[in-house]
Figure 1: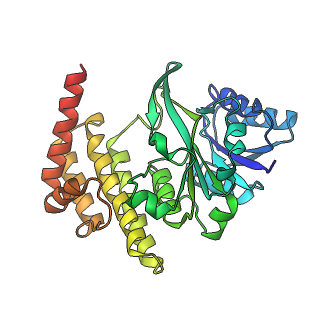
Figure 2: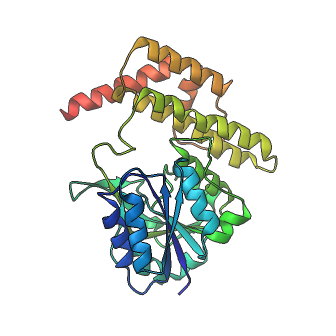
Length: 330
């Protein structure tokens, strides 16, 4: 069986790392390597990586100063030897025997990207599926642009997928170093515009730990502002890649809308002040520098129109809607 490179960025996760690595080591009938990139951990994470590496030749460890998750993942991409690459966060884990099930499917081997099912796990119980896909998608493959525009499927993370290494290398796709939060979604959107074939499999593959203090939940005002780096990066990417088709540009512009939507949907988790609101509004105006042009994607078309009409109106609608939903849940 062809080699799979499993890339794990590691930073101060000594209490979770063993579960993550062990979930890979118990995979059966699979040829894999694990690349552990210790991103300057100050706890025992680096030592744990070295211990595993000494006991298993399939595990390679890279130690570096703290440069962030994008830099760590890129180290993994550049050192991977496998035909396939997948990313696993060090506080997450994969399902037993899932990799063997995935590669039993012949369609999957011929695709650029494989998407299986990922679930949020809260206190050992399945909370909900992350970026679910229709049952009828299973065992089918789609062109990336067709998938986004005609099937209206996009997602916001890079984990829980497998990427053909030659595909990543051919299109020189790396994680943007300029982005500190939301970089995985931008990475996926860029992969989508180049993928000739994205295959779906109805297999439970990836588990995301919903733990207190998890990066995905510990929102601050500065993190919300940092999300806007995604838009700056996309603006530059479109300018420097003149070969992009109008539909590909639409997909990247739709990512801009996703960034702003995420910012206002998470605004309530930060310290809400009018000063912060106005700072954020000006930041958004400056980075957008005009309207978001999305002509071919139907999803959220009305919301994009509202945003283009008035950032304030869009923000009020999103924030109030989020507050109402929170009150209803209580």
